[in-house]
Length: 312
Image (cartoon, rainbow, N blue to C red; front, side):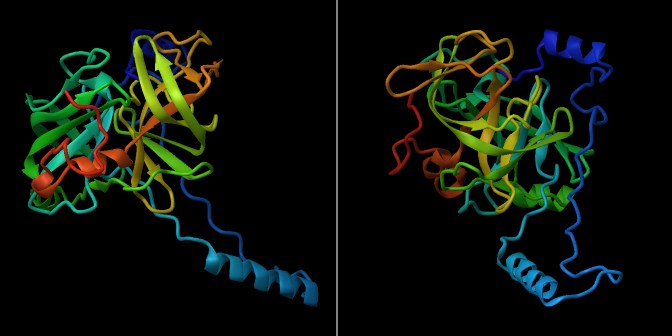
């Protein structure tokens, strides 16, 4: 699990990265997007029919390619021990109480037990809201834990004391929207950590039928390609589709030591029960299945049509 464990922080000190509190300056900055290569030939190069044709093809491809959304820290939050984000459903209204998404194992009262589902638990937890540059601009506060579990998935959703409109009016920051469709293999993604003010870029490598870690089992988890080498403190980070700018998953764990199905060493289990261990590979839990469970006024309704989240 990607909480800021003592061992992970100690390792950062040894390597010179330093231990940062939740609102500290970023240990790393996000890599800026590369500028596109011009589709024309340099002035010093002879322009031939072949090069002109290649230029036309390149320009046509650029027109057809989907626009890539700018992914920043705006809307992400830093918790005392994890990362998270202010989220909204596709049909949420500006007047609805805002929600914050993080992991089940980031819950302030401790890990939910296997099979445990927490609904409507009182909470006054605070979150540092970040702007696009990763600077803390204000403090948000929870009114309750709307939903939390580590069964089938690994999520905590807090309801806040402010609406989306109030947050935007105070800070000029909008919530991130949850996608209502399952991500696909190969999708280019970014994992944006509000705790570390660090962004990881990679792709969806594939999906895991069952991901087991200690006593917990998660279904249909997202496996990253190796470039998303997330660390402790990135738990709860939104996983954002580069093309749509929507949240498709929430970062939660990785196999640190090559052990089999132990805490901090999840293993993959296929439909036939075969176990695969991928040391150094990290994972997230899909979030599209959250959308049908929240209705008008961002009210949780676990009996709603299409809602498959575990029930208490």
